[in-house]
Length: 355
Image (cartoon, rainbow, N blue to C red; front, side, top):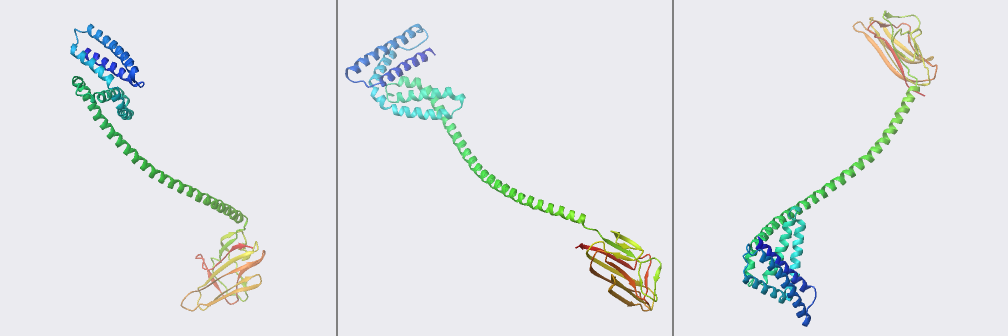
């Protein structure tokens, strides 16, 4: 472990010397002066490392030959300054690529990424002098394994990143489709809202119309009646015409019909509907009725009953009446009708609409 620490310290000294050589151009006597200064600085660092080595000589196995070789490598590093400068762009490119890869690595791999950059830089510097750095290459083999491991991990990370990018693109496409569907839905919602506003407007108008109709219906008089003639059976014939009094009132809304007189009196000016049905059971009898509007006969209906059946007559009409006009049924002389609990003879009428 101490040997490796000493070796790494020496590598750092060499790297610092190379960086100092790259800080400016060196020509002529300046190169010699600067080279001498660097040699003194490196010599000083080597002496420091050697002192550290002397203190731990019992635990390290670095021989004097190795120190001589390291000194030679130091000299070669100074002489290969120009060559290293030319390879600087390559090293910087590798460092940039490594930096890109480092950004993709998780926080737990930061320390490993730092070792990868250092090993990649060391490998690039050792490639130019691999024929003379066999010992260093042997010692760096373990680091190369680490680099290979990192490269494999980087490939895995690259594949993972590629898969993630593909997934992101797929999600973007899905989002585009979803945005299109959302836009379509929003347009549909907007259209439905507009339609709802139109419907609400129409509904409000309809509600207003219904309210108005309700008010009109509330104000409009309600008139309707229906009545049967009698439960006594046969009525007539008489020598003179008589007014039929339909005394069995079934409905008399508005109380416009009088069962006492048999006369309907129009409570308002309007259009009214009237209908009647009369029945006769006696053989060889005439069944007939009149319907009057005030004093004007509007309908005359007759039928003669033979010896084998019953007869009935019915009719209906619509009349425009003034307020106070009367409508009633009359039995002509010589005619008869029949009614009982079965309500066979009926007179009905109701207001269609007021005028």
